[in-house]
Length: 159
Image (cartoon, rainbow, N blue to C red; front, side, top):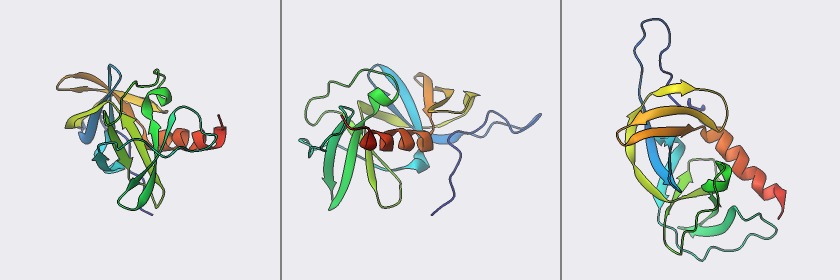
């Protein structure tokens, strides 16, 4: 397994050190903009509902989809970041496929807006690990490791 990469580029690494931007995928969830490190994603796909139902899973788990013979669990990102479920109709939005071992995990988002090199203006530990300024304004940076842990916890939560 590859070593984990930092979720965001620090604003500086010491006195006088220049900021190093990290390429981030920027996307919309509801009316908010978020970003994940490009290297944490395998691909972006258009959802093909209906998703297969996952028994006893909470509402944030939209189901499972077949992606070229691989089963991928699809989780609505909105509840994980404290927003109401996204009212996306069939085929709307996009699914961010995370780059993880053999288990497939997809995050349902409203739309991918692009990829930009970003520098965290503020950083802290946790799911919302920082804020950066993108071309379109402020973006909340997400820690992919914390995000995966929260998404996987949904499958043991029942519902």
